[in-house]
Length: 243
Length: 333
Ligand SMILES: Nc1ncnc2c1ncn2[C@@H]1O[C@H](COP(=O)(O)OP(=O)(O)OP(=O)(O)O)[C@@H](O)[C@H]1O
Ligand SMILES: [Mg+2]
Image (cartoon, rainbow over all chains, first blue to last red; front, side):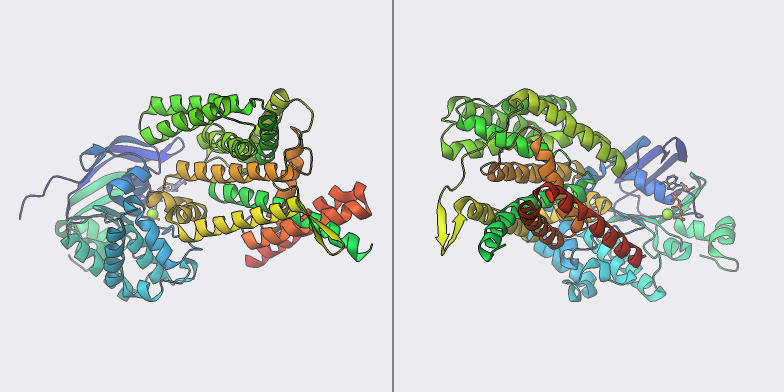
């Protein structure tokens, strides 16, 4: 095994919540370039809260560093190359597919050449989006919406993607397609923080894994080891299976 | 009523309707991006008329000092946070240029008074956003509305202090009268329609064809999504307020040539823009445009038949409009 390169995202002792209620209690994790860290955990464990706090949508206590600098606002992080694809997708519903993608280039606006090549690459990953480029985002199917959300996030050529339940509500075949795309992106050096209900698919694709329960990391390690851990198998993978 | 009178009233109604349309567009832009119902828009309208009137009389308008004071506060706030030198430079240089042009330029010249007036009043929009709304931009709509109402009273008070209680008019853009057979078409009415049409066309181009315009639409369409792609929420708010303030100031210059505007007249005018915006469901621009023309024409016809009932007729429009909207909303659920 090659030694992991210096981490791109470092989270240390992160505490966050809503109002005075803390949901996360001192979470630490790190993601290196070209690696996928999967976070699994039961409903309400605080996975979405973790993603929101990392990108600064929630006030955070603790240390979050991206690319060697203290993480700023959501907008600043997007500009620096850390982009969240949220559970809700947050598409621009009344705008066209092409405009949604175009707005993804906001951090690199003004560079026509980069915009054109980003469109080429995203359309190559998701040919369906090119077919639908004039259609309003509101009228897309669930799978197409997820492709658009991913595509929009990729338009600015981020270095870290934070994906909250990318498989939510999608047919198994589309989930496989999306996970294949993620594996391809990792091969190009993209780092991915992946939150998934579908623990098996997540641990299959990830390099490392964390189990989050009640706002705390209760288990962590290489994903193959986690997938073989009896507690994980019992709780998240169902009985009779191994990684 | 003869056809002749009807056509004269229609001409008047279309011109006022065009103004309400501009105001409705300003309200819609601000509401969709920031959820603020921009009540003080009417005060900015009055500020613009009164500012241009003073400039045309050769005086230095008090709103200039209001701009300088608020801009200075913005500079200090930005310097304290020290992260965005371009914002700081803008609030330093723009007011300085406007102040210099007003104090030492030929401010009463017709070609200078109107642009100067617009340049004084327009930045007040983003400054109001910066200090009144941005600090509480996540608050519920009702809180923002109460804040907007309070700000309206503050601005009306400032207007009273700066300009006194008397109304003022500005020079018309065009004093000519065009004879179409027996019908006299006033050049100012035509100018209003032309300016409104140009502005609507420019806005359509901005929102439909430029990345900056699309970014503003994105901020209106999905606040979270816009932040996630890096479109700064505070900047979008400032842009929306700048557009609305510019449109309000322009409306003040257009309407102020025909109607005397006092410090407290603007509120009522912008309320009618608000009626038009409500008819548009606070969302649809074409519907708001139709609503604005309807309000203008009804008001004009109403003033002929039953002038005392003029405003009653206009504001009574709100009831069926709101009923229809809530029916539609219920139908969607
Ligand atoms: N806006 C909010 N205000 C108050 N509490 C919230 C809010 N959002 C989430 N919570 C609470 O925070 C806790 C963690 O929620 P979170 O959405 O992070 O869970 P999750 O791990 O993403 O769950 P799921 O797998 O269902 O998506 C839950 O108890 C939830 O009720
Ligand atoms: Mg969640």
